[in-house]
Image (cartoon, rainbow, N blue to C red; front, side, top):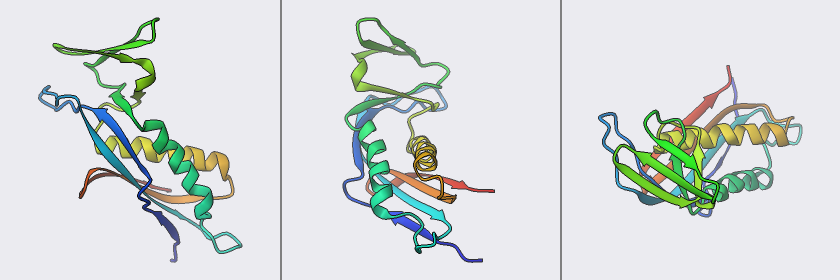
Length: 164
């Protein structure tokens, strides 16, 4: 069996964001930030022109996702104990146990994850990237996708999609 892939690891595919993790015992990190980097490997059949997908076509899609997370506070919208309230005055209130935060709604992104770990960020990013690639390039049949989200050098969470 043969397979083909493209891999994209560009210095500009990065975003800075704030978050905190909630651990299984209920403890939570203090609010802090990372300068995340994103890595992508896309596997698909070759087109009649010998391409998985032109790099010039896929890089802007990845960049859109990176830019959407940049300079934001990332919140886990599916954590059972975290409450997020969008006030009419454009402020988001966040409560976790004895903690209270408030921030402008424009600065906050609530993700459909249960924790803002690098692994979950990679999964969200990978699923959203696949959705956008399928929408924009319906002729490309993605057989596999690997997305890495690095929060510090040498420390990354990965998500892998494999087509059945």
